[in-house]
Length: 80
Image: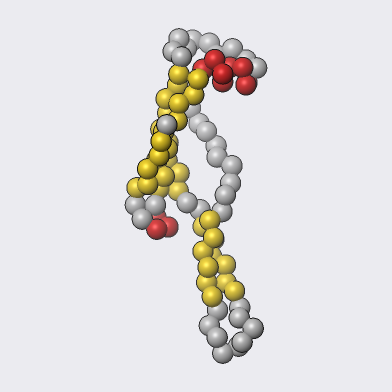
């Protein structure tokens, strides 16, 4: 449904809003979802960027090492 960023730089947190169709979810899981009588489940969660610093050593010994930050992508755990 949408997302927004809170904070800046490496301290930024993504706030994500999702909507799941219960019937489609039930079909994907291959199981009936019981005790739930709505058509959709709305949820909001937060995630932080996980980064790793990579140091690149130049061939020229007189040059300073280059530090580059890379975003690491991983699976997301969804909790009820």
